[in-house]
Image 1: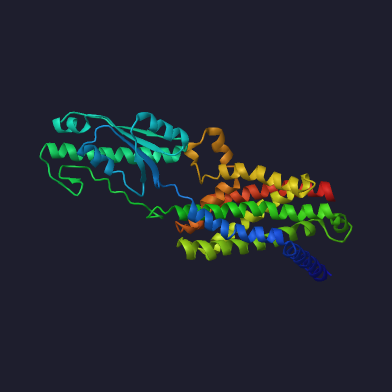
Image 2: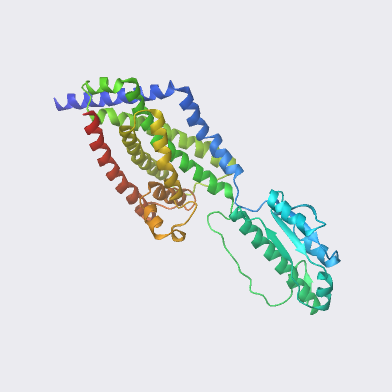
Length: 385
């Protein structure tokens, strides 16, 4: 008798799971959205977003017009800087910055070359548009290094110290930096993986919520409730079906886009990465079902997903490390499942870390999953049982 009951239970689960997959396949708009997000969107993020200073528009106001001023200006070269022309009046530089036509203006005052020839100290000014603070910060750092290097070479030349190809023959401290896990500091590696994790997060909540809300909009949820199916057999097939779709999309994004196109390394266990992804998607799928219980249509469900997704991405730690956040925000980060998933994914894919290293991340996702599952089941039974 028990064996027959189990067989019927599993057949019902399989039939309901297959029904959910068929419903998704019959929704071409949602299907195209899923395919786009796991392919073209990830490609665009990995190839089009860079944190490096690249061809910053630079204008020159050279009131000295000496060999020394031209040599200094010539040090600002691509790919970091891009000259847009010389200015005849100081006011033109401010106008270019106000209009957004220049990111920086290099001002070299009169007497620059003569002061260097006499061995006197001399200053140059660089005005930087820091409305984009990251790019402004990088421009300031690069400009400081260029001017400092030029000043060092001029001082060495005055004191008769040899300088070969920009290297001054004086005692210097060589800062030998070794970069781990991303030796070339390729932004595509970071951005590609980050976008993949964000897409997984979005669909882990949106697809189960959409599947449940569609039942409510069409009135088929009442038919399911009067059937022999239990609330668990109604809810779980939606999670299992959407989990299968998201895992397939993750495989497409990782092995169809990131690895072959951007040569992103997979240094750890692929099975561990997909196991962690399964745990993470199951956790957020419960959150998606919970969203469906408090919304009446797809528009409300979509807005609720966006409302939750925005703070989760901000508190994921991918953009701002925990140490740089205020205390309140730092504690909020520990409540975001994306924080644990991000750390675990980067650890597996780029660092080759295993369970012995990542168990705090797995414990964090599991703890959040237990809380969300309890709340979702309680809410589901209250509304539909």
